Each structure stands twice: as C-alpha cells, then as structure tokens.
Length: 514
Figure (cartoon, rainbow, N blue to C red):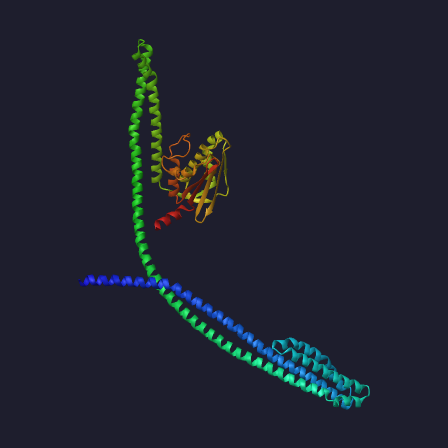
C-alpha cells in the first residue's frame, strides 16, 4: 500500500472518528443535562426537607424552653402567694394582700393554660391531676388563713399554718415541678440534638448542591463553547454552500432568462410565420368563394337537365361548397385569434415594465369604464373599495390583469341571479393583495390550477374564448413580483387573489441581488 493511499485512509478514518465522537457528544449532552437536573432537583428537595426538619426541631426546642419557663412562672406565683400570706399574717398590713390577690387570680388561669403543653411533652394525666389538687389545696390553705386573720382570729390562722398541711402540699408541688422541669429539659436536649443533626445534613445538602451547580454550570459552559465552535464551523460551511448556491442560482437564472427570451422569440416567430400561410389560405378561400359564386350563377342561368349527376352538382355548388367555405372561414378566424393571443403573450414577455405610482381604485375604475357596455348589457354591478392601497407598478400590465379578471367575471355570471362583482384589497408586508370576487357559476376544485394553463378551460364550453386569458394574467402578475390564486365554490362564486409587489422597483432590486 502506497504512502498516499495510507495517508488518505488515515484521514478518512480520523474524520469518521471525529464524526462519531461529535455524534456521541451531541446525543449525550441532553442525557447529561437531564441527569444533572434530576440530581440537582433531588438535592434541592433534600435541602427543603432538612430545612423544614431543622425549623420544626428548633421550634419544638424553643417550645420546650418556653414551657419550662412558664412552669417556673406558675411555681413562682404559688411562692409569691405564700410569701404574701406570711407577710400579712405576721404584720397584718393590707399591703401584702395586693400580691396575694394577684397571685390568687393568676394561678388557676396559668395552670389551665399549661394543660395542653403538659400533654405535648407526655406528662401523665395522674401527675397533672395531682398537681391540680395540690395547687387547690395550697390556695385553700392560704385563703383560709388570710380570712381568719382579717376576721381577727390570728391564733386560729396560726393554728392552720402549724398543721403543715400547706407546707406538705408546697413540697409535693415543688417535686412535681422538678420532674416537669426535667422532662422539658430532656425534650429540649433531644430537639437540640435533632436540630444539630438536621442542620449538619442541610449544610451537606447545600454544599453538595453548590458543588453540583458549579459542575453543571462548568459543563454547560464547556458544552456551549464546544457548540459555539461547531456552529462556527457549520456557519463557515454554510457560507461556502451559500456562495456556491448563489452562483448556481445566478447561472440558473441567466439560463432561464435566456430560455424564456428564446421561447418568447420562438412564439413570436411561430405566430408571425403562421400568419403568412393563413393569409394565403384566406386569399385562396376568397378566390374559391368567388369561383363558386360564378359557377352557381352559371347554373342558375343555364339549368342542367334533370339528372342525378346534375342534381348532385347543383347541391355541391349551392350547399356543400358554401358550407365548407364557412367552416374554413370559422377555423381561420379561430386560428387567427389564437395567433393574436400568442403574439400578445410574446410581446408582453418582451415589453419593458415601467414602474410608476398608481392609484389602484382609479385604475380599476378606468378598466370598468371600458367594459361598461357589457356590464350594462348583463345588468352587472361592480363595487370597488375606495380603500384600495396604492402601488408603484406597471400601468399597462395592471390594466390587462384586471381587464381579464373582470371580463371573466362578466362572461361566467350565473343567469339565475344578478351578477355582483366586488374589488377590494389590503397591504400584506411589502406586498399588496387585490381580490376580485364574483357570485358567478364558480369553478370545480379540481380545475383551480388547470384554468391558469395555456389553452385550458373549465366547466361548460358555452362561452367564447381560447383559454389564454388567465395564463396571460399569471405571467403578468409574476413579472410584477407576485402571484395569483383562486378560491371558488361551484354554483356560488369565485375569488381571484392577486398579490403584487407594492413597489416594483424595490422588487427588481431585490431580484437583482439574488
């Protein structure tokens, strides 16, 4: 194997490997991004879960601390009531009773407010009931001694205190409070531990998410840079393709223009050359007609004997020959009309378009005026919208376009109703669309394109015509930088939509660029 062949083979293998690698990367990019997005979603959901768990544990730890404070507050109120009671018993001063009365009112309320919280930290109902009974016992003992003191029975009040009933109740209350304090402290410790764990997991989730986000962003940037390089390569290749394509389009356009000119010249030459023999035929037909007339006159002046051959000769001269001549003249007239239409198409293709500002409403109104005798004869109503947009285009071409369309609308009107023709339009971007709508007999859907072909007609062939008018219209519209289409419902009417370049000069410049 030669070195050149090995080099080419290596080059092709390398290109194939590069293409496979690029293909694999291109196909794997969405999967990588999807996997990263799913993982990031998992981390975000985990972070939200741990954040919620952290918030809940923190709240429960705070609630436990607050409950502990409120329990201590209850115990403090009981102590304040006891201290106020002792001060009043010792001094008899009413000043001590203010604190007592306040504590007496607050203790039952405060205790009832703690009942739901006791249940939340699993304090047994037996303990709660015992605490309630002890508080009531202590308050009863305090209230009883104060009442005895105020009624002047100081010794009786002292006797109640000496029984130590209140002291025992207070001691048991203190023990229960210590147990509740231990419970609340334990709950707070547990919640704080859970809070620490949840916070640590939250930090891990956030850190993992941040790292993954950095990785994804870095990967996305790398992929964007890689795609950017690929796009630059593709853009360079596309520019090269465009340059080649533009060159091919220009060459193809020149070829088509040359072929079109040749076809138009050929049509003109054919029409012109057909006209010469047609003139000769018409001349010889006239001569034949004169000769036939003379022979017929001779037979009238010199009648032949009553013989079958003579009878056949008279019929030939008086009937057959004139009928044949009429048929020849009719065929020549049709052929002459066809040649005229072909020449008209050829001249239209060769004519240089002259763009000028035009008022479409006024132009179409002038066309309608040339058809007035036909419109009046058919009792046809034509409505032209005054809002038709202006254009910069070729006057003669537009007159021929709308004259053909209006002529068809008149020709193919439905005799069962009054013919109505509407002309209206609108601006569409850099184009203008003019619609000619009638309520005539309509066109079958399968003939919508056929009617634009040369020498092709649709429906009943009961109207004069060569099948060239709409082909001429389409050729003129395309020369004006537009297109013509048809919408029709058989038995209801037809609409022709003529789309033109609003500015023919601009369309020409655009066409020259391409």
